[in-house]
Every structure is written in C-alpha cells, then in structure tokens.
Amino acid sequence: MNLSHLITQDAVREQSLQIDFLCEEKAAFLEGRYFEASRSPFFYKNLYLSILPEKVVDFFFKKWRLTETTAGESIPAAIFRKHKSELRGFPVKIRGVKGYPFAQVSAGGVPLSEINLSSMESKKIPGLFFAGEILDVVGPCGGYNLHWAISTGLAAGEAAALQP
Image 1 (cartoon, rainbow, N blue to C red):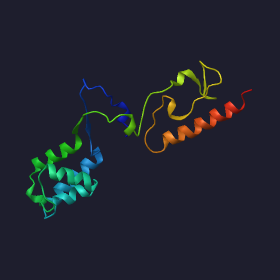
Image 2 (image 1 turned 90 degrees about the vertical axis):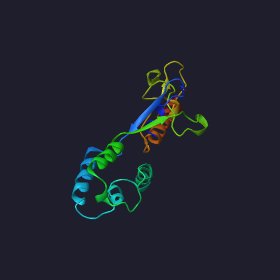
Image 3 (image 1 turned 180 degrees about the horizontal axis):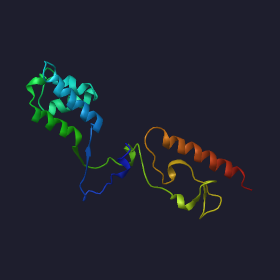
Image 4 (image 1 turned 90 degrees about the horizontal axis):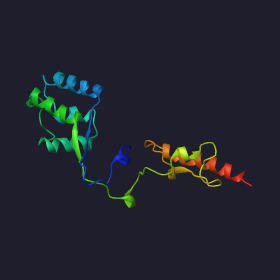
C-alpha cells in the first residue's frame, strides 16, 4: 500500500519491483538455524515458519514443490541458499491498476506550495480552504493520512470561521 501511489497506468512502460521478505537479521537467523538444525531431523518448513507468515511460507513451498513434511536434512546447502536468495529478492511484475473506483490510496492534488499551511487557505483564491486528501500529500499506511485529514480539516475550519 505504501508504494501503490507510485504505480502508473502507463501501459507502455513495464513496471516491476522486488520484495525482500527477509531483512539482514532474519536472513542471518535463518542461515544459522538451518546449519544448526541440519545435523538433526527437522521439518524444513518449520525453519521458515519461525520468521515468516504462514501464507508466505505456503506460497514459496508450493513454488519450490516441497511438502510440509520435507526433511530439512534432505535440502542441500546450495538449495537452501537459493531459497534464501529468492526470499531476499522476489520479483513481481506489475500489470496495471484497477483504477480509481478500486483505489485505497491516491496521490496528487493541490500542491502545498499553493496554500498557506497555517490556515489551509488557497494562495490563488482567497476564501477557498483545503483539507485532507485533496492536497498533494502522501503518508505511509497506519493512520497518518487520517491524522492529516483531521488536522488540516481543523485548521481549515478554524481559519474559515474567522473569515468576515
């Protein structure tokens, strides 16, 4: 969601991204656990379930054609490293967007340079106030856009109330 506003509807330009399911710390943990556990019987899937969501692990195990009961000691180190590498840089091709009716995030709007930030009043049209997502501001998921909408609405409302 945090990147979706960067995806365009430009069909000419192929767009893609790579997902890193493992940070450096998790990758190091995974490697340490693999080599530690490879000396004893264990389910290879449990190694991944200890650090990744089950749906992600299920997706990769299907892709790798492995079962839930695949023994960890049956996976050679070279294959393990290949799996780890895929988790560090999983390519995803972007085929397009569904359009505004399905949007959960949008970008664009009135540039902040065109408004007075203390009152949210337009610099071009006095008496016109803006708030929320009509402004060209993009925040990360997690309530920031909601906070922006409320705080700019409050500022715009208070400033508009003082208008003659």
